[in-house]
Length: 553
Image (cartoon, rainbow, N blue to C red):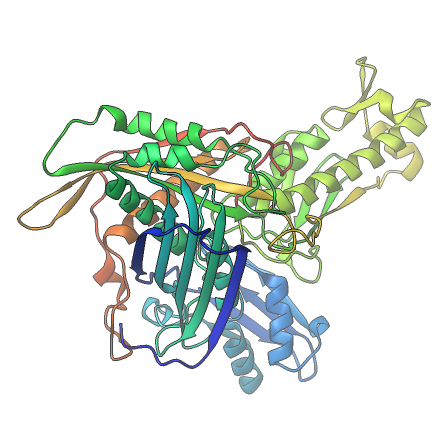
């Protein structure tokens, strides 16, 4: 990478607990993480009807409402004059946050007086957004018995030519670098530095990737220095179930040792034979989930024939959120999932949502959908009770009918028609969710849930060529209650392979500020782990989302 040209410094400091507690650092490390490219921002279509009329866009965006706000600022107009539609997005991983191609399409349409479709090539996408490269300096104070005492971290993020989301990424990287371990003292500093390279933005965890890589790498270094097994060192220092991550934050909601044991057992870690060119490694990925001060609204509508429509701002981008939110509504309303439809996202009609990020889809928007479905259900039961002369509490919904005290089911259409006529009636419910603010929490509000993953790998290294072969890769994640197991499996397998690829192959290389490997074909590699295994780990702690759900995007 070319030497950075320092244009702007965005510092973030967390002095969560003071100093190193008088303990001499047992290990210092300087670690460097090279950037990766998320995904192309995708095609965008813009239509401007007449001068002075509304601006209407179709964009593959993860956050249509913040995009609307930013477009209004760029185009010097009111938000009410901007309408954003979100069709199928494809993968996002952070690349489709905030303005990218949208202002260009809008201005071209304004100049041409006609609709414009604007789409980047893959090569252009490499110059649009990347992950933050990082330089991490970590000092850790450890007792001779392996007890962690203090961690002092300094992180430099390469923000590229523009600060897309660098302040937010800096805050999160700074906060997450202690990892899931017990410390007496923590001090973290993170700075985002602008350079003459591709702009960097959010990418799979807002700084968690960089922080976890440095933290877990140094845990292994400490274990080697002390002559301890890396597994034993982790177990000795992991936080317990219910223990706050930091003073004022929420407690750990997963049994971290149980998850690590599951991966170690599947990998055969404790029975690993001695081999001169093979080795096994373990790591724990850990981040706060659900976003900071992140609100969401939702609306659920039930037609006279019992068809259900879920209207929410979470964007479907391959993670299965539209399916999962429909399943939440179906469970509350007692109807088959096939009768529930997820409405198209349109900023004119969709309830407001901050964006599809921070693993908030189920624990924030899902909670709003659950509350909206419960509101709709309560309205239906109150209406049915008024017709049947009983209390709503005596009724339950069963496939668009009501059953009183476990008796015979009465179809709801037969109750609706005498009151509202043949055209029927539609019941709607509204829901809103936001984690409460707290002046005691380091990030303004306690973490909604903790997102935890465990991984293990067996690799072989050719001492003559340096070739690394992954013989086995094991990944496990605590998903709470899986609404859709197939979707969860796809999420975990996909993220495991993305991490595998970045660890072994992927980087963006610069020569005097010029990207020299911005070709997708140059980066393709057909190799994969000889055996990949995914474990379901349901966890043992409380869950913040609807019906004990964790938060997929």
